Length: 551
Ligand SMILES: Cc1ncc(COP(=O)(O)O)c(C=O)c1O
Image 1 (cartoon, helix red, strand yellow):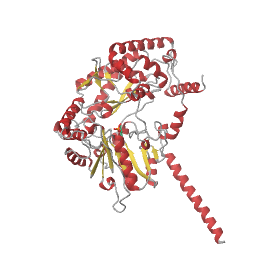
Image 2 (tube, protein in one colour):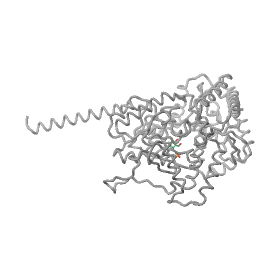
Image 3 (cartoon, helix red, strand yellow):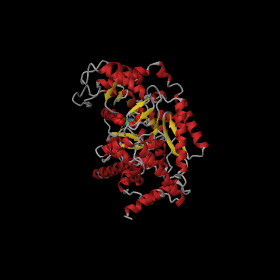
Image 4 (cartoon, protein in one colour):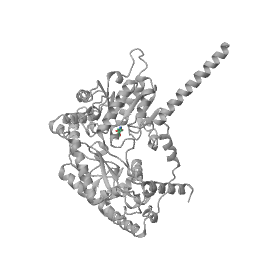
């Protein structure tokens, strides 16, 4: 054969080998994606872009599941009573909320997404939720009208030890930091203390301070890319890691995150991808997902039926984390444990370390700030280094004006010193068992009355599940508020308890919760025709299609 021909044949063979390898890689990747839309973020974004706005007029609002006239009338009466009760009970709080809404984007956003959007207009007009609180007294929130509500919001996870605990850390921080005021750049001496304690807690060599969990995650990923020379970041379906674009590749982010791979969690296929690809810099894991692997943070705004599922098997999740860590380590991938949410909540430090996994980097935040905004990254020295000895100009930049702010550092110091005390350490003894028993207590009380509601939990982090298909489960949040249980804007999707909730108060929470569900049942919201969740989803899809066709 001529030399030219040989070269051409070799080229063709190489091209087809490359194509085969690429094809195999693609196939492996597609198998490692979770089958839900949460596992296919681009597709989810495309679908989201096609869903038109429509709103149920009052007449349809009460019978969107095709219920009969009698049930619709019960719902209408219940809704009116609830609406009158809110107006009577929360006048000042609601007036200030209404006055502020137009100028506060966040308030407009949360107000819009408390319930599925076709129902939102009527709910916003008739059942507005107050956004203001005058003060806290332990687990009680007191609004501008003097109403006392039990705090089930957990302040997005920050409130672990109770509102009073953070009042103490903040008070102490003001005294400690006051001599420096807002001096930045130079450190308050408590920084040295924080570094020492965080090194011990994390088992890591170094610490960096940031202003939010989002920023700590950004820095962790940036360092992983810098040191591995690779671009790809892997996150798992549904897992939240803050609102930076690269960790929020789907709905919510206007740009595609081209370097992010979203894989299925607790999946052999995902491990195969991690073991074979050579372009992955890091894997981010959020152990909160142990409560609902591959599902996103549940919010009542998405409750179109009763398909929400959750339940924790911490042993199985720990086994997964071990295998994940082994795979990452074998293939030179940086394992980042994002413990911004669960850090300190299930253990006096890292949950991954509690189950025997040593991540390369850990991000921390929320409660660690002792009540002030913070993000922290800890890691091995080789990964935390922001320069190269042999290429001094090729640095990995990270700053932030308010990093290591004296007041934040002082509040963190107060938090960490309290964490070491006996009474606080004792709170962790039998913690999971205690909260599992409390979830079982509530579930038994709900089952005793035949109410179609139950809860699932990861220690103090709870979510409400619905056991009978319904389009109206999101109404429960309004009955719970009427019973004096304060919820965050995601409603029954996430309840977060602080560790100062004692047995007596918990009994009271159970009583109120059951009363709310009972009232909702009496008002007919769960009395629609017997349909499956699948049929309810189809019903919503048909509505959507009709709206799209302009009917
Ligand atoms: C696991 C996790 N990572 C990161 C973040 C972002 O933290 P922040 O809201 O402080 O930016 C959050 C916030 O909820 C979180 O839960």
